[in-house]
Image 1 (spheres, one colour):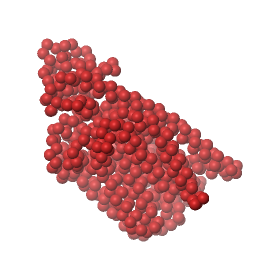
Image 2 (cartoon, chains in turn green, red):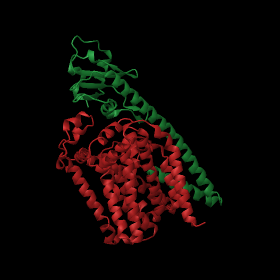
Image 3 (tube, helix red, strand yellow):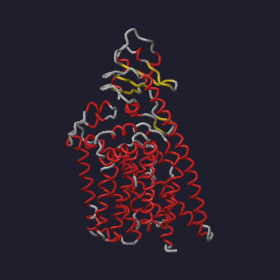
Image 4 (cartoon, one colour):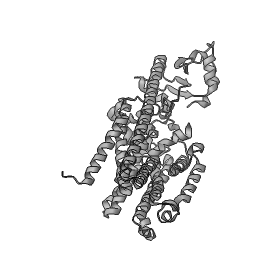
Length: 169
Length: 347
């Protein structure tokens, strides 16, 4: 609001100044200046709207992919989502909303099943490059966002510490 | 035919502002949910006792905001368009309230231009296009209404307006802590009014300050509730703490025993918005240092902005003095300006 008011005062001041130099020019200067500002601002807003729409579509796609991959979650299981995109340009994508987003999308989320996220780069690196483990952790579902898609890595995790639980939120 | 020129202008201005805002933002009504939108929908799906428990026990005391979310969620469920239309409606109301306020302190032309620029200001995309940030718009609207009612009380002397100002301030404080700036904002607007009327002697009268006292008491109460609330309001409605934490709402933090430092930190950060027009905040951190710097600049510029000294200052004409004053009235006037913060500080 500060900028809007300051800009308004400036535009009207420009109008007053123009009026002093050339009678009847003040209103024209203020009107043209204001209209130009409004057009530029409105154009910039359209770009931002596009970003929020793309962010919303991305969030919806990720949640859909998670729902498809998490079909066998049982009560009491733990789900870890790694490396989800936080922002798209100036818009937010999932942020801390991934867990409720997955829950809301799933009609019957298993009782007591928890969803965590992590953005720890070591965890993401580990999951992207990990090979299937001989004895995966039971009750643990791990998804990593890589190459614009969500991928399941549950069978690659045999050690909980590799997922850095202290970085979960 | 039945309207005076002044009323015709107001009608034209209101219609123009509504149309401008609608045309600019209507494409955003089809946006989908993102980020904390989902958290808020989860909260909105609580039973009423659960929602009240959550809102009173949260680190930041925002029961009006949560109650609003709860109502909207029950109204629209998972229909994202409904949510976005609600926030667009709030934004339009805020634009009109700003128009009314600036008309009071700067004239109708200034009001129309300022409100139009505010309506489509590109930095406002977050609170207007992201439903989870609507507390910013709500608190802006309530803050403006509080100041408007206060000014109306000053003009008419009717106590009902003063009561309305207090109610709006209380609702704003219970929506978001940014409303703690209301008394300071009222004081600045009053100063602008008195300076315009060349009546700064009114500042010597205790009545000027006594009128602000109830607002200060409101703020003190909210600070105490914010600081002690997490402990004072224990869950009573059967909400399962572990369920809340498992929902990923970071609600676990809300139940930690804290000293409410978040509230103090936020308040200091909000104070920095006073100085947005003059401080390159991009290079600063949103901490106490920034707040101190902003306050120092505000204090240093105060004589320039408060009229008498501004008029005495060499080379400072009336328009410049008004510009200077307005630039300080504005940022605190509505915390919609706060939308600027995350982008400046975090990117």
